[in-house]
Length: 205
Image (cartoon, rainbow, N blue to C red; front, side, top):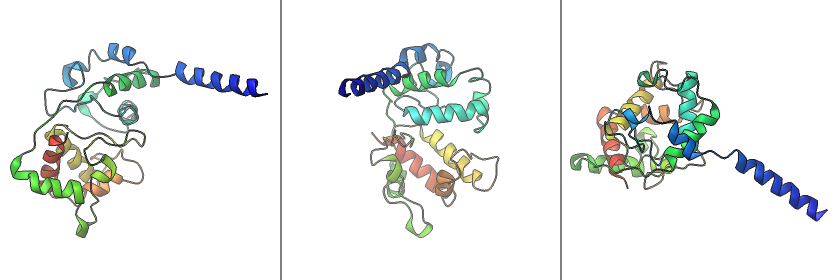
């Protein structure tokens, strides 16, 4: 009986490993992606997000949402058409295996950005960003909370503005689920607060 149980465990383990994402295969699928996101996922242009070092679960969700129409990204139109779930998992594995480059914080925005990231804004019920994204901006990969550290400030700012708009209008970003986690966080923030916390995030290491 003990041997049978051991065989079953090994069989399950083998099945799991057989379906593990293949970063090498993912790299082969990112040839077109490199034009905007960089060969290793570190985009040179601040309008395109850095994907290097991002959690696989988060990347897979975002790619599926874009492919299936739950997240509207005009610059990604058609890029994921025809990609299978396995393809997306492999692409995510490749980017997750790469090291993300760093960024710089605007010294004039440092104090305000740090205050929001570390402590939130209590009188407007804005939680601290670090609660989900970790003190150093590494995120929470198993939970699907993205890594933020080193991300382009302009890109983060654009996403926070989109979430804020999405709180009231479908034209904004709405793919944070029924709980509206990011829309609820972004809605009370002013333009200056969004800019400051985005700058602070860029400087996290």
